[in-house]
Image (cartoon, rainbow, N blue to C red):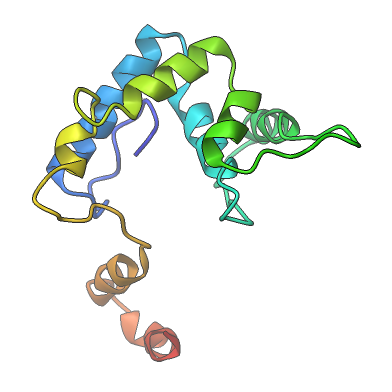
Length: 150
């Protein structure tokens, strides 16, 4: 969702979240920041998440991902940041940091309405969405064993 392209039709996110992501992409474009790179840096900056898995379609995307990952290299003897905000401050440039702050504004940012909507959580791990998706696919019975594994 956090790209300059529209999500595929089958994507399980609701219309409100898709609209918020599109607005976030516009904010990043206005700030001359690549939203996909900012999203990767955000995911990689969370100290509670030990692994970030990326979908990479070509060598150019691989090079970009490596360059982004290299921003996290820590010099020996230095202390590592302990919070996500501290990590972000150390890896984002000024334009990225300003865009990140605009996107995370809980009052006026593009996700404010989504986050503040009556206690509904708009985060999902994708497992239940993937199961629902495969129910409608011909041959889905071949992966029934996967459902029993979760």
